Length: 196
Image (tube, rainbow, N blue to C red; front, side, top):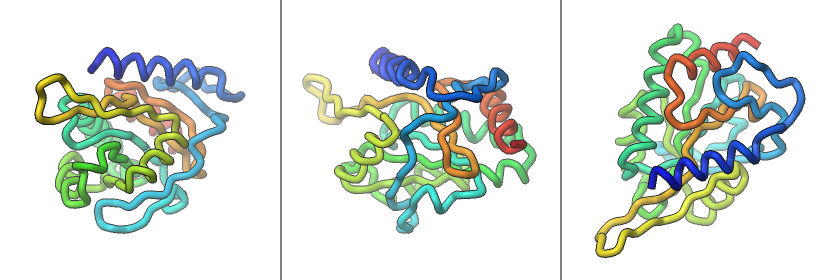
């Protein structure tokens, strides 16, 4: 599964290369300023509130697609993001909204997301939708995912793109943070965007 996730990440990074002008060499993540996708999102948060990217204007948004039964990539990513928050001044961390979009609507109920996502940090929000709504969001952000059932298994995994997007205060895609980006690098990049 990790090999597929890394392959999906490499394919995504290749498709993001050369997204636009004004690249900054000092970002630790991949600068995708000028990307022509990832402009719309319409899902429901784990508190039952319908959300769009416009709800978070004036904040940076870190957007990650995953699922609560994920054995490794998802908890590691959320944990790394929480660690990055601890490296930032509290006032700065409050200007960043982490959104975890479930790609497993079959199992990720609002109650499940409400228990899982804020466990990592109380400000993090889990988003869910119908299978069609999730498919639309994933397509908009060029996220690949598919259900994976091992022969003889009674449960399933979901292969998915491993990495996070960062949108600026205007809701524009700016960065792609690959899986396992060190928390210090995440904090560094968020700080740069907050200072713009």
